[in-house]
Length: 340
Ligand code: ADP
Ligand code: ZN
Image (cartoon, rainbow, N blue to C red):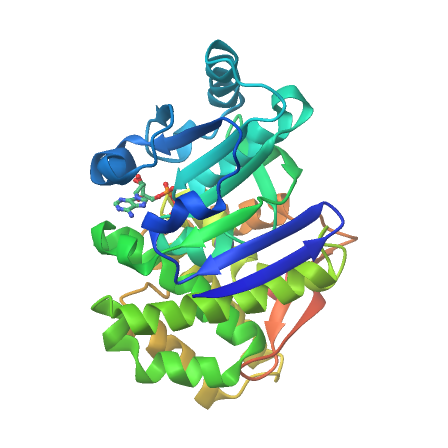
């Protein structure tokens, strides 16, 4: 087990990498604890939950609403929760987002922690302290920066994850390697088959690496004023595809990474050889590399991307790859981006 500490202005958090779910009791406070989960996770793990009241939401992004957060707050009141109570989210990114948000606003904020049960949640949602819900189709528009006390990551829990969801997590792992660690990229290339077959040691190693990379960036810039923007690699184009084609976040990020690699090649920051290595790795991991697999609406996606990003003049901030393992944020003219 390895603990990764995250210290920011909004508090201190700890990611417990490679810790067993059975040990959760060690990290819970002596006060009253309430559990938030979703129906799928409940079905698989309810028997192993610590013995506290459970509120279960419908699985999926649709549960990330102000209304669901309000329902949780009402339930907490009915159950007699107070300022000292502790909220434990057990689930994927959606559960972590809702539980973190509800805990942040209930009685002006109570302590909370997560058991991250999806690969995406372990490598991404576990670090950063962003909690939020959607509003009228706009993602994470209502939310807070607030650190969980801990995030427990147990690779054994990934075995029950549907294959699609499992593969989605690979995209953010590859993203972290591309941003900060060429050796990690090589490791992924070498161990791609083990990843796909859910090799516990390989996954634990990659979760730990991802958590460390993200933790370092978040500690340097919690509120995304400068270096945290690096984490948006693949997300500018990716978010637009996710919205227009309605595909999962992981798949959209994968397509976004391929697109960012192509733009980086055009900008002469990335070699053709490295572009080919990136694309080939994404394919090996069964991730898509082009939006054309899902839609032919290139113009609609492009317009969604421009609308989504805060543009300054006629350009948008774009994260480019400087070789493998390093990135730069550059302004790119919208007209120029159209060519790619
Ligand atoms: P994310 O991919 O951001 O983590 P979700 O929280 O929606 O998004 O999780 C993805 C899906 O996987 C959901 O349907 C959720 O119920 C399910 N899920 C999460 N963790 C597990 C698990 N360990 N076993 C089985 N299903 C899981
Ligand atoms: Zn993402």
